[in-house]
Structures are given as structure tokens and as C-alpha cells.
Amino acid sequence: MNRAELVETKHPELSIRRQCDLLHVTRSVFYYKPMKQSESDRLIIRALDEIYLIDPCMGTRRLVVKLREDYGIETNRKHVQRLRREMGIETIWCRPRRTSIPDNGHRKYPYLLKGRDISEADEVWCTDITYIPMPQGHAYLCAVMDWHTRYVLGWAVSNTMDAALTNGALENAVKNCQKLPEIFNTDQGSQFTSPEWVGKLEGLGIKVSMDGKGRWMDNVFIERLWRTLKYEDVYLKEYGTLCDLRQGLREWFTRYNTWRTHQALGNRTPEKAYREDRKEKKEAEAA
Figure 1 (cartoon, rainbow, N blue to C red):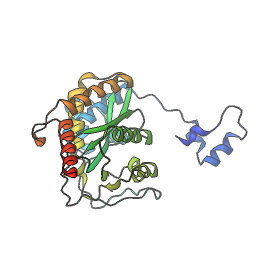
Figure 2: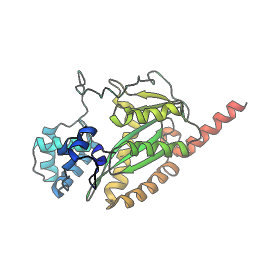
Figure 3: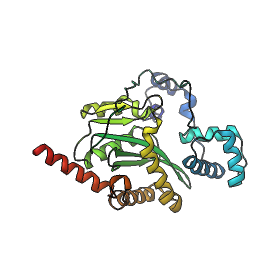
Figure 4: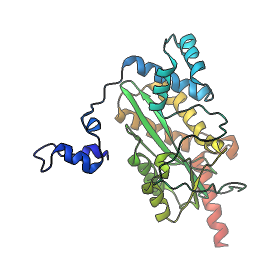
């Protein structure tokens, strides 16, 4: 919860100034009222999302040109930079050193998958968050995937990118799995380094692994999932409400898991590969 929401305004025992001081919230944050996103910004964000799926290596200079030539949108670099920050995306390029300094309260965990041959279901899970464009704003989607079989075990959607989103996806994955994984791999985003998220995994007896320097390709499976989902469903249907989006995603993920075959899985569906792999594992353990 946003700490500004804890400030009591109806018959408070303490003044608003004192409550803000105790909660370490500036009064400008407390009194701030977010402005409705403009139609022009929504068009630019939709275009940026499409371009990012095609080429995530484009910088703001090239994006400004691409927006003008392909979409007829006139804008500038600063505008594009601001909207990309709101979307939570950045250009993929080789950095000599990370400039962002993590929160001191968020511990970073080592990468546990280097040189590891992941050969069975529920050995490693992974997760990611993506942006979903909508006519009146945007939503965020988080999914948990079994690394070996590409089976989407759980997902959650929300209009805020907070702990409730990631925890909801994790809880659904735990309900749907046949066995908890040995390792859960994520990137170093703040949602996945928070004590709440890490505490849940460790409480379940799962080892925490985080992508380190030069490991951005480890999210490639879910990045492909996002690309497929958006081009086959989200961009075509343009859901108007969060309720419609949630229902549409439920239908699409069901079809992805139970109907769509993968060549890498021997032309099996993710669900079939997951169930068969777990069955073979149980039989081998019983023998």
C-alpha cells in the first residue's frame, strides 16, 4: 500500500503535517492528484510497445524517427523517455557498468543456473512482468512459467505494478503445480528483490536465483510468450476493461497451455509435456 494512503483525513487525531512526518511522506505527494493519461500519450505508448517487441535495441533517437515515419506521430526524445519510464522498459544494450544502485534493503541473490542442464519439469521456474496497453490507460501482467516445458503455471493482471501482482501470480502457480521447484529464477527488478517476495519463496523451501551481469537472455522464453500473446490476442482485441482483459487472458493462456504445440517439446503442448514429464519422474522415483 502507498504510505500516503495511510494518512487519516476524516476526524484525525494528528494533523496532516504530523502524520506525513511520521510516515516519511512529503505533503506534495499526499496532495498530488494524478492526471488522466491523454489520448496522444496512449497512441505513442501503444506504438512504443509494438516497436519494442520487434526491436528492443532501439534508442530514443531512432524511436522518434520511427514514430514519425511509420505512425505519423510527431514527438521528441524527452517525451519518449518519460513514457518509456512509465512503461518500465529500456533499451537493451551492452553496458560497461550498471548505473542504477539497488535499494539497500533489497538483497541480491546469486545466479544459480550457470552451466546447469535443466532437463525436467518443476526443476526451475521463472517469471516476468509485461505492460498491456488499453484504451483508457494500461495494465500489468505477471506470469510464472516452468522453464523446461514452457508451461504457464500461474498468472495475474492488475492496473498497478506492486507486490500484489507478483504474489498473485506466484500463489496461482503454487496451486496449479504438481511439485514446488528447486530454483526460482527472476531478474533483479524491485518486485522480485523485495523482502516480501523473497520471503515467500524461502518460506516454501525454494532457492532464489537472480539474473546477473550478461544474463538478460535468460528471460527469452517469457519474452517470446509476451510477443505471441500481444500479437495474437491483445493487439487484435484491444480489451476495454480490466474485467474483459482478465477473461480474455484466461482463455488465451488455456489455449496456449492445452492446444498450442511446440516443436522444442516434440510437438507436444506445454501442459502435455509438463504432465508427462512429472509422470515419468514419479515412475522413476518409485522404481
